[in-house]
Length: 331
Image (cartoon, rainbow, N blue to C red):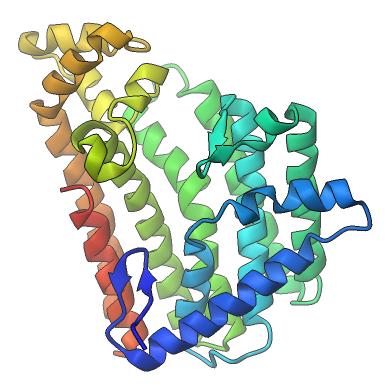
């Protein structure tokens, strides 16, 4: 059989590909059944984003990490479902905060119903994740609680922005680590722990996955500026239009070069539609893009350093290939 991809990364080991395909099928089945309710409307709203699709990236990382222990251990699929439910719950809440009309190509829950329904559905998914987690042991409950705390802190700090006198770039990276990296780190931790991997392997996978998560988001920052629509599947400059200060924007705003004055003016707030092309052209040619790529590379190097100490098995090869993909996708 052809090997399925890990976020477009081919798995050259057929046995690993089969293991992951089977694991993901089991995750999908439990994910859907875990949100079933006696109330048909609750089931409908809860399945809304599940049925919209998604790569199940975090679940895949749980399954890959489990390869470093016993990948058939009974808690691995439930652990992956806990991670996916947590991620999906955050998406319902994010869409309300961002007033997003679309998610994964479908109307967002807040657009299809209303904000209250979307918020409560997210809360319901958190509750369902907690119920599954209760059967996996107190240590994993504690880890999930700490992860959730980081997710919320990251969202709060993103919302209020850096404190006066705080470096905006350092603040941004720390927000990414909490808001994006933390749950991806816990994906690796859950998979390794539930598979009975050694403490050193657990820590290495946790560090590598967090670094991959941060780098992935930094890659999205670059793609929003650099990639043509036909390549990225999204309209370039979306973040600029919304006034989102991603890493390239923050570096450009930090420049004191007189030649960057026009760009700094354009990026001082949401970029007007008639100015987006000019802003993109100036930003693509600016040193800020290279600085952002250097930051992404530092996080990938950190991930690869952690992975280098792991046993040389096909799952490690797949994770290293994922690191390379995170860099390559930005062009």
